[in-house]
Length: 254
Ligand code: MN
Image (cartoon, rainbow, N blue to C red):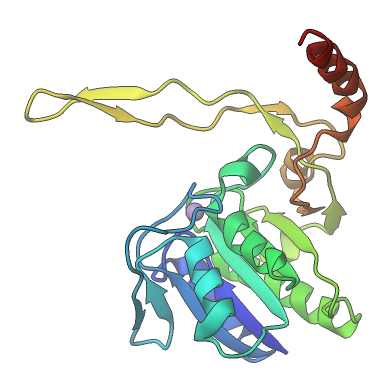
């Protein structure tokens, strides 16, 4: 098995180092990850500045681009082979509910999925790296078991996995979840720059709004590992009927 690892917190982040250490003896593993923190870059690609790939002393390669750039470059030329699995993370903080839209961790995995490679995005729900080795051990266990069960093959899928920051023996079972929802983000934070201009800092993500049983928020709050299959098609299929009526009415106005 060949695994490509990336992340959005940058190639020096404890989460990607722990993930690499956990997976390096279960597969041929290569790491191609952003040089800087690229959290919340979603699936962004860099089109107007050149990208460079540099080797790090630990064997990782880092790119002056986004998570999706890293996976894109790796899959379309850098690796020279097709990995069996793309793994992203382990992220410093939750990627649950609406976070998945913004997440560079999910973006890196999604880039693999878009190229037809099975992909997993791993995140720890608390942002302090506490029990990162336990999260990495859990990720290793999941990848190994999926491989043994024949789930890592030619059929692509995209999984979003959020793990509670707990020791391994306290981490609960996998729970298959739907995404919850968050309230809208907190207000933007403003400060005066030393030159007297107003600086704007994007505020924190909103608190959970839909954290009902069955959601990723609920499962991780209970100490479980939340696993959610994601898709790329954003079509609101439930709304197609109503919009068929609206669109024909709009056309009738011509
Ligand atoms: Mn991140």
